[in-house]
Length: 102
Image (cartoon, rainbow, N blue to C red; front, top):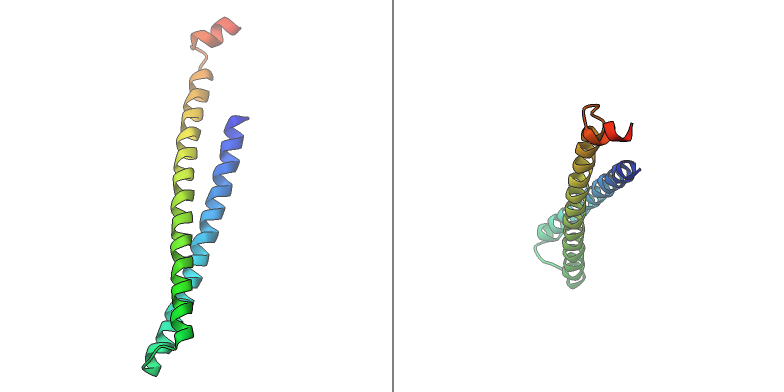
């Protein structure tokens, strides 16, 4: 059960990370387009710079969330590997614990 739980949690985190990466990509594209538009005019409007700062803050927040999710994913993967190892050890017929249970 624990193995299934960690596997489902890992899949959920991978999905969350992909969503965050897509959002970051879209924000980068929109930010780059806004910057290109502003620089071709030769100046920044005061509203554009505020919007640029807001977008940059959002981007930094998304980067931090992604880094946090990656840490969680790494921990869950290590737990999953430990569970796989325990399962393989317990599944061995030569294991003394299994023999005593039988």
